[in-house]
Length: 125
Image (tube, rainbow, N blue to C red; front, side, top):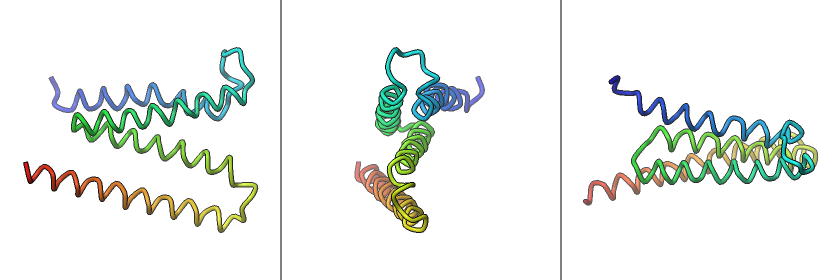
């Protein structure tokens, strides 16, 4: 078998699951669920955050960096779409983008700290 096959299968499997959740979290009227479209959107947003966090945790536990990166990417996409829903109309554009930039820098710092802590724990073992 080709060496990167399982990594590709994992990434495409996660994409196959999370892309429809992302679409339905923003367009709840496309769902067949028998609820109002706002309720459906909220349900899919919660599922999106939960599944992304689950994939991050599962990938970290198994040392599957591809799964962690895909989970983080979708977690950030879900977070930014919520930021847009919450604050786009309330904040001036420059404050909104300052918030987005600050969040991006904070995510990078947190992920780098986790990576450094993890590599230090691997060297100690």
